[in-house]
Length: 325
Ligand SMILES: *[C@@H]1O[C@H](CO)[C@@H](O)[C@H](O)[C@H]1NC(C)=O
Image (tube, rainbow, N blue to C red; front, side, top):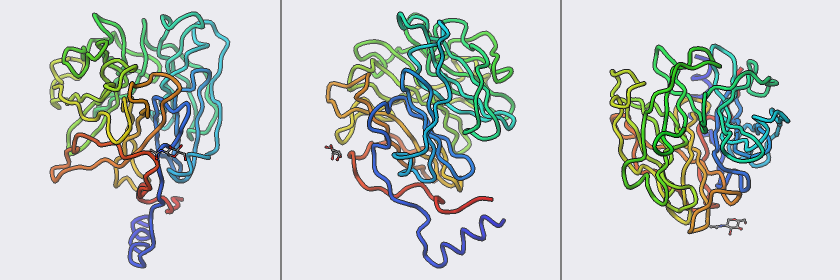
C-alpha cells in the first residue's frame, strides 16, 4: 500500500526511478553469474574457482564496485577446489547457497553442495551437505506451487540435465534424466546441456539451459517448457526449443544465465556471461552481462534475447531508488 503510494507520487512529479548502467557488470571472474534481489539490494555471485563470494549493491551499476564478502573457502579434499556456479535461494525464510565443488586433482570430483545461511543473504553461511550422489554441476531450483526441485547437469550418455525433488533444502530424491543434448544447437564440438535457470511468466514455467561446448562461440541458450500438468520429474513433461539466446553484437558464447526481478517486482531481468573472443572462451575471459527481458501481450517471453554491445548505456531496473522499510 505505502509502497505503491510512494511509487505513484514519484511518477507524478516525474522523478527518475531507475539509474543507468552498462555491461559488463563484472569484467573478470564473471562466469556463471547469478543475481537475486532482496530488501533493496542486488546480490551477485559468479564462479571465482577458488572460493564463493557474494557482492551486493543498491543499484545494478553499483555491483561493479559493490561490497564483497567471501562466504566459503575450504581445505576439505572433496570440496576444496574448482568452485563454480553459486546460487542463492530462499526456502521457508532462510537463505541457502548451492554451489559446485570438487577435488584439486581433476574435474572428476565435481558435486553440488549446499551452505545454510540466515534471514539475509549477507548473513554467515555454514557448510551443510553434498546433494548430488555422483558427478554434478550448475544446480538451480525449479518451483511449482507445491514443491521445490533441484535441476543440475550430470553425466548420462552425454552431459545432460537431471532433476530431483528437493525434500529439504539439503536432501533430494533419486534423480531422473530431464534433457539430453540431442539437437544440433546442443552439439557444437561436444554434446552438452548445463547451467539450467527457471523462468515463470504468463502462467507458464520454463527452464533455460546452456548448450554445446563452452570453448566455442556457439555456447548458447536452449529452452524447456513445462506442460504445467505432467510430473516435472518426467522428461516428457517438457518441450524443447531454441536457441533463445546466442552470440550478438560482439558478445560470443552467451550462456549460463540466471533470472532476477526488479525491486518493485515489475520487471524480469536476465544475467549471463559472454566473451569478446570470436572463438569462444570457457575460462577467465568471460564477463557478466545483464539486461531486461521483454514479454508479449500474453506474458510470454520474447525470444531470442539479443545481447547489447558492451559498454552501451542502458536504463537500469525499475524501483532502484525506492527504499523499502
Ligand atoms: C568497453 O570498454 C572497455 C574499457 O574502457 C574497453 O577496453 C573496450 O574496448 C570497450 N568495448 C567496446 C565493445 O566498446
